[in-house]
Length: 96
Image (cartoon, rainbow, N blue to C red; front, top):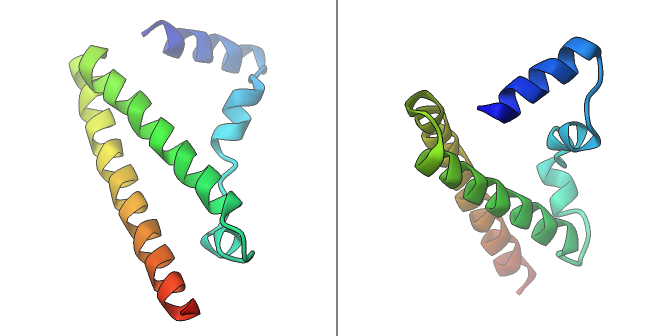
């Protein structure tokens, strides 16, 4: 796709946009539950949900190879979301 070519050009020039750096800025699970408010958890879950939506677009509009990779990534995101939901429920039950 065009985006991959653009990223390759940026990599060759030694330049990466801030968005690419943010892609790898995920909190640890402990950080998500270290506070009493759920703001950090909610933000993380929203980012994962947005990532899933973007992957769904790639599945629909990307090449066959991109769609296959995106489908595997969707499964990983879904598993992560389910895991986080389970942890959140366990935490809520422990607080009762």
